[in-house]
Length: 311
Image (cartoon, rainbow, N blue to C red; front, side, top):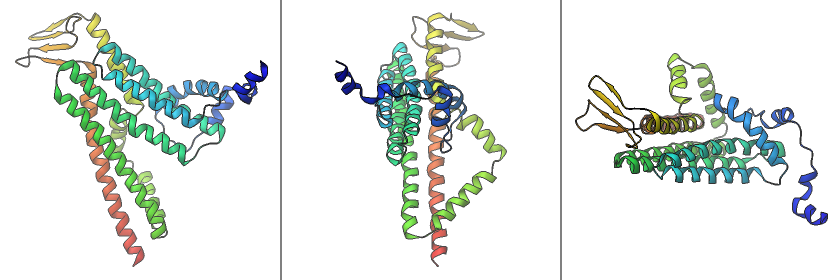
C-alpha cells in the first residue's frame, strides 16, 4: 500500500518547504515586476500561503496559469448572466484569478522555472481573460438593462485591450528584429526612452498615475468590480426609496435596478456596476488610443535613429 502511495504522490510528500518568511524572500523578491499597492499589500499576503501548499504538489507554474485562465473564463460567464448574485460570484472568482496570477510567478521563482515560456503563458492570460471578462460584463448589463449600447461599449473596450496589447507586441517584435539588422540602435533607443521616463515625472504624470493608471490597473479593477457588485446587492435589497426635491431614487427590491426620476422625461435606470463600467470603458478606450499613438511615435523615432546610424 505504501509503495502505491509513493508512486502516486512521488517525492513531493517528503519534501521540506521553507517557512513563510523564507518563502517571501525567495518567491516575492522580484525586481522585474512592477506591482501596485493592492498586489503588494493585499494579494501577496495571501498568495504566499497558497504557493506553499502548491509546492508540496507536482503542480507547475504554467499549470497554475492555466487554472487562472479557467477561473477568469468562469468569472466572465457568471457576469454574462445579468443577475446580481451570479455577478457577485463572478467578482469573487475574479479575485481568485488575480491571486492565481500572482501565485504562478511565485511557484516559478521557487522552482527556478522562470523563463520566456512562462512569460508567454502569463501574458496570454491577461490578453485573453481581461477582454473576455469585460465583454461578458457588457453583455450581462445589456441583459439586465435591455440596452444594446452598453454591450457595444463592452465590445469596444475588449477590442482596444486587444489592439493596445498587439501594438506593444509589434513594437517588441520590431526591436528584436532590429537587434539583428541595425546593431546597437535598439539599445541606444531603449536607453533614451528609459532615461526620459526616469527624468520626466511631471505634476500631470503624478495626477495621471494617481487618478487613472493606478485605479484602472488590472488589479484595482477587480476590486472595484467586487465593490460595485456588493453595493448593488446591498442598495437594491435594503435601501429605501429616496426623494430629494423633485428627484426620486427608487432602489427596489422590486425594481432589480436603480431608477432615477426628476431629471429625464422617462427616468434613468442604472446601478453601481453600470456606472463604473461606463467610466472604466471611457478611460480604457482613451488609454488604448494613447498607447497605440505612443507606440507608433516610438517606432517612428526608432526608424529615424536607425537611418541616422546606418548613414
